Image (cartoon, rainbow, N blue to C red):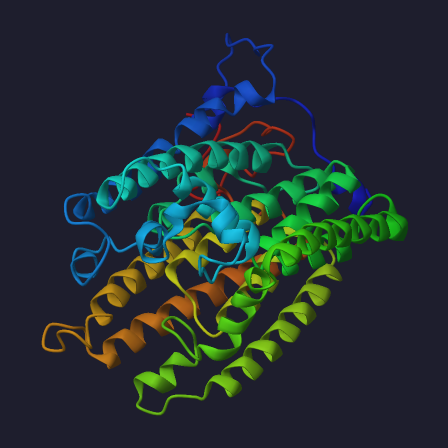
Length: 452
């Protein structure tokens, strides 16, 4: 059997009992429902991390998201704070016109400003309304992402449950508008897997305008072998360039600063919390902003090289190559906010990351998030803040966990590790929607058997 045939997936739908675990009974009939109905129980699992994320914000509902209190209560969210802090209540037109200063890429910033501009009332009432509206929007987008991961092709290890139940969602989804470009990048991957080249290109171009890490995903789409060959890749990049050019031209005509502000911030802000170079700041020897920008640029080159190498592996997938590139790009950037983990999550699900690896990574993210909030109070209340040395340990732990995720994704592109990861989505048998089932027996995690 050739490598390409091995990556093809059976089309038989997954039943609800297989999604939630347990072998098919002898008297259980296969329902006539399609993939969407089969994935409905997985989509319902999103209620758990979304509820946890919303509860985490409850500490700010009474006092708001400004000042030191949100940091101490572990509910600080730039996403909600910018409704007032960046004056986003003025709406989308004010943002595109340049009168609202927001250092976010244009697509993510536009959605952020559009939703904030619709918020009724002022002050804390507007923030509360925005938070509720974003939870609803996030639920819809995440449901679409779960379906995309569950129905993607040429990703034999794709695991939608790893996305729907991830603790990383609870930590990140209400902190940043990054969910918008992440969703566009995943949608581009789904469209590409189904040979919808123009749609994949348009979505990929919009994703790049929504967040720079999307470039690693677009590069993975172009390099991982797929039906259509070089002609399809040329069409993909042409459509992506058209999307970037058209939207960029319109925004530039309104106010070019809307496009340039994120780039200027990237060049001038220097090392921020979460980034590797911030360790030098913690040690009392901060690195200059210019040197930080150079390191970040070299990191982008390194990420591109890693994607190229991953795409040349024996068993490459877009998800695995994207994880490798995203991690390389993020950890060498000027800063690595907690919400940056949202970029890696859906592609780790596409790559079929083991649950124990996933939970180790999620644990490191949780430790870092707690440490970061406590460390940020150093300037205002140093006696109660986390010492720099302890935060450096949490930061190193998180970067190491991300590196481990990238390594596991890299291993998934070799035949030696094909099918070695068992997940909740593949317990204990059966064929997932558009994806072959995982192993049964000692190779699965946790080990399961068909017999009594």
